[in-house]
Length: 225
Ligand code: AMP
Image (cartoon, rainbow, N blue to C red; front, side, top):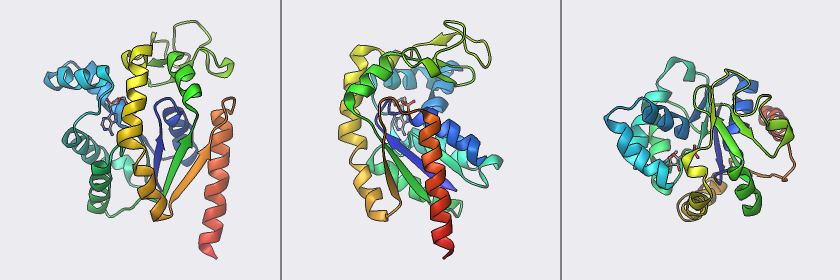
């Protein structure tokens, strides 16, 4: 199954994709995580990529295309995957269709996490991440706070605030989202594969994933009819 996870920064794409991919036993492919890994490795590409990410700007499409092409050709992608944060503009829809066509697959489901701007801002300011195992925490959500302040529950590494989650960058990223990414929802709406999920501020990730799994189960039954 190939799932695309859409939504504004801070809508919960990463956390939801992670839990969903575990439930479906398919990999979670986050272009943001892959870019942060490249930056961490401190090679020639790192400087260029960190200049985009730190500013909250989109990384050029040719870089994203290469990342996606390489990742989907890996063995663990045979049974599908969850794309988190890709595609992010109209040109990346073309890239996505092209890359999937090359491996003989197509998108099955597009999930759009709809969250108010007010919630997004609160979530991003309080988000902390582990660069090692990619776990995501939130300091104002009791079910998402680390057991030991500043340290990852899963691997013990230090938690950080992403440079682009700082208050002054968040507003810009929301603008980039509105201009570049939001318009792609209309494309997927026309394909009939889009499901809009209206996320309440206090809704848990587990609840969202349960709703998605319920929907997929139902859809599977209808498809067989
Ligand atoms: P994310 O972790 O999805 O919030 O992405 C963090 C940052 O990585 C974005 O603000 C962009 O700078 C970059 N990025 C991630 N995915 C993409 C993409 N599909 N296209 C362009 N830039 C991306």
